[in-house]
Length: 288
Image 1 (cartoon, rainbow, N blue to C red):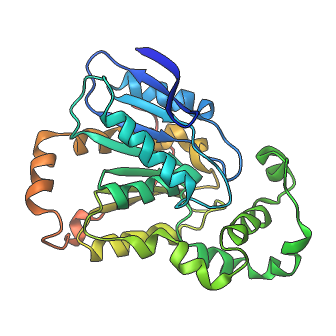
Image 2 (image 1 turned 90 degrees about the vertical axis):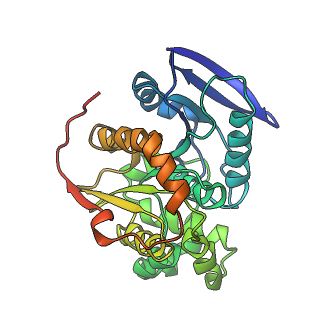
């Protein structure tokens, strides 16, 4: 494995490339963090994926109040474009995206726009549902200022939900009528590719969003699987549980049979219930 650090892909934005000897395909890895975060936070995950045979590009992108379908999406698509035009030796038909937390929501947006397979760990999907379910905190939204406060400090203070409410309100400029259109649920079409979602049953991100995405993608004839993990772990905190299924999903997505079947049948027949898997995973051990 070779690691090429801080390669510039767009306007001073950088990525790290984790290069195996013979790539099975390429994965764009998007880190978490709503207003702060960095590719270095996913180094362990990138190394695990590379050792499993994947070329991994772990990219920084702009985290700001335009949200997952704003500048973050623009940057992720630019990274994907850079990957396709790079000198790395791999099959350009075998590209996928993996996102963690915020990066999971961005990854879904990339998949919907670019038609590449997606794995998302703890993505926030149903913005309106989240705001409605936490509406009792709404009266104090204007009193909270988390600028410069680390996520660890926010967690220690038990302020995760108020913090996320503030981020979402900023994304829609306090116009709650925009919440539904901000969600990736409003952009699901048959152009999307197979998707695998992970969510803990009792974490900050409501699991209902994953179920709604599965329903929307099924209606658009796109396979979507969910793995619900018991407990309150969020994003990369459940790496050991989610990684084996994630690697299996990428291997299947990059297989010759799957690529041929996708080209032949995508968007022409509604997936049958047996092909839509909802799994409750408890205490899975890593297989890599």
